[in-house]
Length: 147
Image (cartoon, rainbow, N blue to C red; front, side):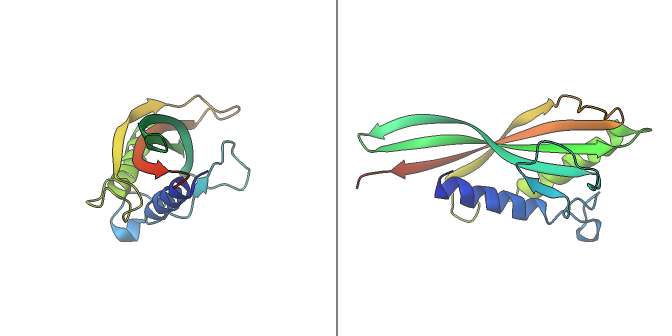
């Protein structure tokens, strides 16, 4: 993982860790933010948010520089046997509020952080009362090598 992507991931995780009811959010998810976790453990408390990188698209600018667009995936999970859709929508609202601040450069780490959409995640094994979505953002940045 490049230094830029690592810094962006850290900034995203920091934003998500601010999700607390005491801060005006719907949920207390700030203590259940994971980097790259793709399976549930017995000791996890829901709701859960996990962050991982995805595809990268590259535009060559010169012989040694390019502009990259790298996907940042945020998977959100709730465990609610009675109203999973409502619980999930509250969590989606929290994640979007935490991510979509006026600073779209993540503190100058990237050119732009851009929202690209939501898709339903696959149902985890044995998780009949677990519902989830993947919220996708893309970071755009430039890199140069050999200079």
